[in-house]
Length: 292
Image (cartoon, rainbow, N blue to C red; front, side, top):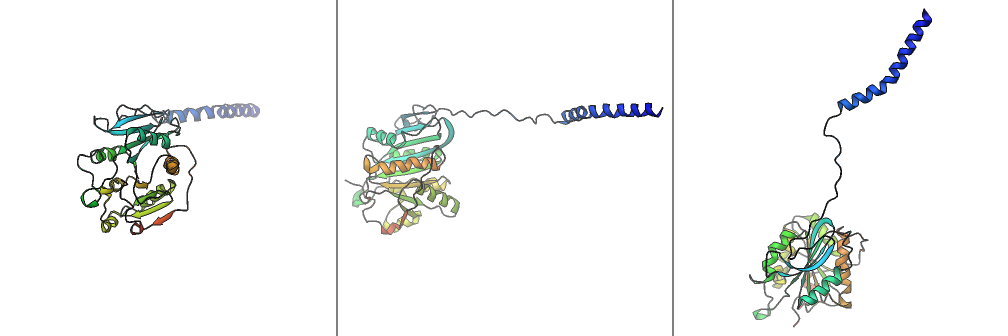
């Protein structure tokens, strides 16, 4: 009798042990809350860049006009990556015709692998500085392309890099003018890092009031950087002799390298630590004066 009871108890324990995992699994399934399954990840698709006319397809580059709704818009060259990302505006001032502008844009950014690039490079051709009565720099007029396109540029872009060429006082090496935002040290540090990543060996750090004692203003110089910084968008200005030929090769390399720093292109960032910081008052008197 005792043996039969023992066998019965052993059979019951075995059956319980076999059923326990099934019951636990069933309980876990029944207690799982609906809607907790991870959604399938979908690859982000980059739409055509439609802020210019005609639009530019992802992974392609092409000349265009900016902004798209302006029939008399300025000449543009777009390098549109195949992956979503920010819009970086490079404002090229001082080209006499569209052919020279396109040559400079292609020489600077034409080698970028657009299939792996994130975001868009929008290169714009804007007028050079000019002198008005009394030999003073002219502020852009209300009807100038610089003035008309300013709101559209600030609205469309995340980064702004002004590139002025042809000033009298600029030698073979370009200068980066870093406008430091007041009360925003984090943005100031970011902009300084951008200037160094662009491989420009000379940096001038200043705020807008620094220009007034010299009778200058960012508006007259054609620098959009202060207005962009006011929106917390990183920006700085470049003063260079030229963007073309052997003399402009270093600057073109630096501007392309800046996209690596912004993580828009896959590449290694080359830092140039031998940056010389110059005081604005120490520059030649005719530094900003346009060449005849």
